[in-house]
Length: 185
Image 1 (cartoon, helix red, strand yellow):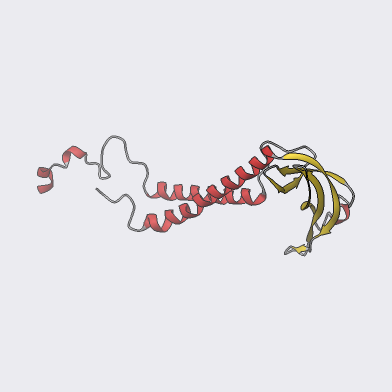
Image 2 (image 1 turned 90 degrees about the vertical axis):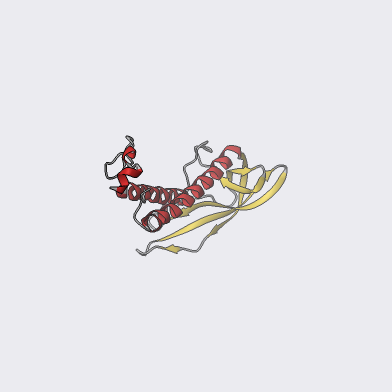
């Protein structure tokens, strides 16, 4: 049987792409499944912002800065009073003057996981979606994995197209003509 790929081609050009693409695809599916399951089983309650904490500014390469806003929120979950640090939003450099977030003493809606009451998020105005929009990192991991898998498929198909279905070999001879008598001549 003839070699399907040139020596070392599959190992050099296809396996690294599959080694990057498949684990990243599995990771992004697993993370999105966790995000979706949280949105489906979350219970919603009201919480009171106890304190607003501004994070350190994060500077981009163009000199613009953004700041994350966290809040220490008190809410009741499973008949227990819980105080948790929850992200309330972020302010970009261009939006710093018009940044809107909760102040101390405000009442907000909080979604928490009944099995892990420490995991909580602020409920958006539209409510908790059944199929939430994936976080940015999940989308980036899925995009990189799809690009790697497509590149691996292109590498496989560019070197060796699909085998013909009529039973002929690459050089055009049929399998029946490979008898021992034909090989001697």
